[in-house]
Image 1 (tube, rainbow, N blue to C red):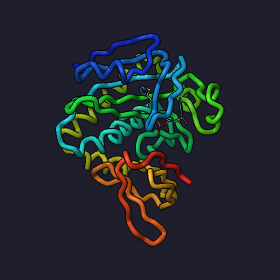
Image 2: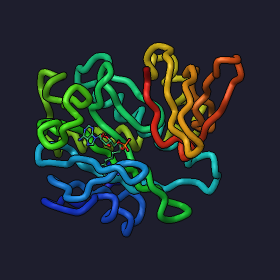
Image 3: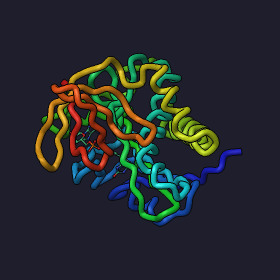
Image 4: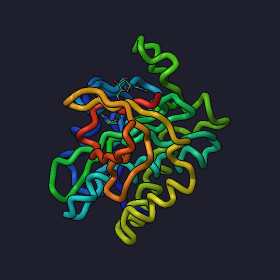
Length: 240
Ligand code: BT5
């Protein structure tokens, strides 16, 4: 039997702000968010027709979990979308889900308490974010453009809850390393590529190599030096 208790709203500010007051294994879904947010103060367009969902998950007290949780949960969403028949779905470190090179979904993982995480998941399903945001044409896509049969939002929610619960269990049992192996084996990152990293100290161009067991980005710079970046250090990660 599922552990989840789901609360459904029509309009909210951000589902993450409702979920932050709930204990683990509660989930909040809204049809519309007025102030949906992304990372580093960016906004997230959340019209009717998309899936705007926040899950409260229990986490152990080990520091490493925080770096790896967004990737593990991103991988859970990729699995759900692949199972719906979509091809070429992959992760872009640290929290994007892309179809080819355009963004289908994003995750915002926030920690309000030491032992619980709020996993905010935004998936474009029937909505067209590019109608609201002038920058997004060619950068965003939606589920209904890539699968033949789009599940109803409550069904999609059910699939996500089940898969995130499975991945969470797998993480508790075997740690993140096993999931990382699965991501790498299934080409979760796509092919090797050059990337641009926006850091507090400026922009760097480096070569994406992969992700380590702490969820840190591994890159190589022009002089062959290998660098490691935890997600909070990188404001923007662009593939070139
Ligand atoms: C993210 O941030 O990708 C995390 C998005 C998480 C949204 C969920 S919805 C449920 C929960 N409640 C919330 O308030 N948030 C979470 P980031 O990597 O910072 O990407 C933000 C950027 O993506 C924006 O600056 C835009 O360029 C672009 N963007 C905004 N809305 C989009 C959309 N609907 N589809 C595709 N791209 C979008």
